[in-house]
Length: 627
Image 1 (cartoon, rainbow, N blue to C red):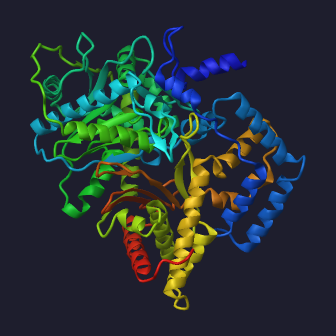
Image 2 (tube, rainbow, N blue to C red; image 1 turned 180 degrees about the vertical axis):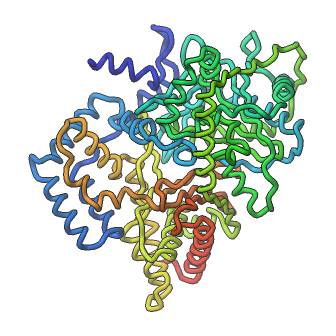
């Protein structure tokens, strides 16, 4: 396949937005994008040196010696490392971003575990105070209006450009989250995006009692429906979907990607089914009107909502009320619990949260005008013909999902003692402070450090996604080891704490400037596969496997709204930790698998709380050093 064909194929499922008509002056968005720098390929020696440094706290001296030999071999002048590096540099010259396509494929589209729990993050929003169907539908209508308001900014390219440290950021992810959907494939999935084209999506999908509806959200003159109009349409949907004995077709999207791809092809053999699936895929987003959650005590309520957002609670609850391949699904339950779940391939958390902040603010606005009541057409119910074979696929997906639901342990902890104001008052980055508390909690629980992943944004670069901040460092290990050492003075401990937070800050700055090691190492490995050279020893080494086994997978996703994002662990014996530091409190969501005897989300929450408090006491009892 020549390069032109390749590009054409690439542009179909997932390309940068092209101006529709030829000769049209590129919009602001495109001009902004083209001004952004390209992602650099870091120098090889620098990455290899940092790789060895990063391994120090997590492997034995013996293993480290062995890896040093492999690194020396890899970096020899004229050797395999240099050849792969040159290949990467050539790739960087030819492409808009040498990493973005590879990353999309390896991290998402070729990942075969279910998107539910293993890939798609959820967001828990503050509980709404409605307690009945009227309130639920009124809030849903207002929320939809807020989504359309944000969509107008995307369509008109008037979305304010975001900055980090004075540098403009890539805004591409915002243009991928509406009207897009993941499509299962036998070995690799793809993404379709209907946001740009002659025929733009004019509808959303609404799901209630496992039944899907196409709801047109624009009037014939192109103006969006008002809250009143949307409320009336949602009432019609509610009233025509009262029967609860429907087959939960959406459950199919929770399955292992290969099984779902088979079931998908099977489902689409029928013309009616195919039309219904296409309608869901083309919709702007999905709104799920959920049945109330099982009643639970106040202290575990938020944790239960987090589970609802991640997986829907299983086949007996709301999991069939979803289409998990849809990029954005807003969830509003009758009891006031609400949030969203999103398919991770098109976007990271921050653009999703920015959209959410906008919508939440919008829902608080008073109604300005009562809309004239023009009779609106009945929303279209999407039909599915369920053959015995499809029914069998649904039953299998239910069983697999329920096992997954039983296995996931999620704990939402609101840490009330202080928020980001405290570390700031000590001139410490709140993120570094929280990451160090996680290191301390883990060390106290297990007696050793582990590979830790924190996502760093690469949006300073065109089409940038993420790299890894490695929170476990030589400095963080020195600090956590000193913390409970009676021979160390408080002053020494406080100095080690400050040095470790400083080291974390430096690694973070390095990562957002494109100089971290993880994506570079991945690039070298993928380059070796592409060049069909035998896999370098460096990547077959136990140390590499240890370095890539993230027992702590973490992410800071700050929001104006008092919400928290949550996701599952990335390894069977690991934790997923997401946090939103507010001024006076911190929202944490911690996940683990019940099938692993060594991990426990509530225990981790307990140790994390203690670590945060101990670190505060330490800093308050010692004068700021001259570090």
